[in-house]
Length: 124
Length: 490
Image: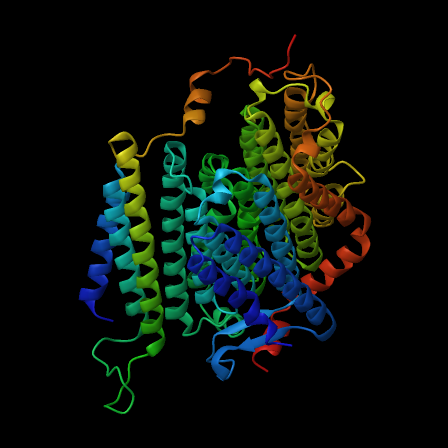
């Protein structure tokens, strides 16, 4: 396993986690993209040491093909999810002009009225 | 009949493509979706019968030997979940068609629904961890689309939380899968038990925790549940019915698989504590809420606690109880959301403040709500009582008094929060026109589907004996990794 690869995974995961903690959706999306790349690199790292031949018969030793197949699938999935998130962010922006992730309205209302009796809607 | 296994995934996926091609003709889309969903349900029943008489079925894709190939595996648990899942998908689809609301008329509804169906089938049949992840993604992507179908303000807001949290969950899951591969060199669920057992304890527990966090978020277990009550109520009723009934239970299914097959640890006190907290927090959340959908959503969390409790107790008897519990819970939860859907369609609201006297307006509708509601609370002789009895008996046998006490207390609190819906929406003077018995008659297809699902929950109680014996056979399959291994890689 190469140190550069491991360090890259760590940096991407760290920066990604930091960005995901923000409240604006654009930063969250950027963060998720970084986290996704970190995980994809991790899959490659999990496979075998870098520098091995990709095709059987060229030269020994040969790289494990399974992680490559996994990482391809994973990249495609990350790409699809990212596009969906971006379109959601755009939709949110056209609706109310910002891309802040808001609290749930009902949660906020329940939190604001401690001790107040909940209306059961029963006519008296 | 192993060729049936891929068909359960290919047919809905192909149907999704066909429905996309027919994007401009809604009637064609509708026929395609109904035809594919009916076929999938029939295939699921055929697989169930086949598996029960002939044992575990394995289909290795591409004709490769099972150690290398992508395997689809149907044992009794998978086949049972596949059948109940396909049945619920069919019921909710017919409900949505009968509702004739804007969401079903969206041109993206049918393709997304079929893709969801393919993802559900695939998740139950996947024979290796990576494909479990892939099919989770398929069903999650479809659920993102279904949840934000209208693109309205509230849907985008709650959809954002749902999508972001689920993407994070997926990343945790892939990390877990990658590390399992790095540690063992395989992802095949038949080969993993042996290789995982050979690992040092620390590594194995770390891997187990990673997978538990990922699946726990999907199943809405205690610290990871807050996305559920925020996002499900924003979805249109037929969509939230299928989410509530099925999606969290797929997380529970994955937890059962990993905890019995891959990590058969003996000490699961942590999981047991989490199960207790899930029950308690879920039911308190439900009591605090004021909208029907949100109360029902918090109940999902609370009920998941019972299933996790069974998994944490461990052993064949406990897993059998959990399997029965899931089979009871899926139709019960779905039917409650369907009743909510009828109310919302009829009165335009499902907030308890705005509803009143529905029982006097329509007695049958009240009965349709009352049966599954009492069943969920665990009132005998309904199916929920049998499920809870099973889990609690195992808890007593193993001497875990505190979790049994929690489970019983939560069951009473569940009844309290159901009473809140009952007094709020059904009791009292009708707000609208008096003695209008036509609520069900005005929506014939929606009503007959709901009646059918409620009848199914009653049937589960009536045929509890054979079903429970089947659950015991399924649990015996699941809790012996050697049997799974022998069936897949002989």
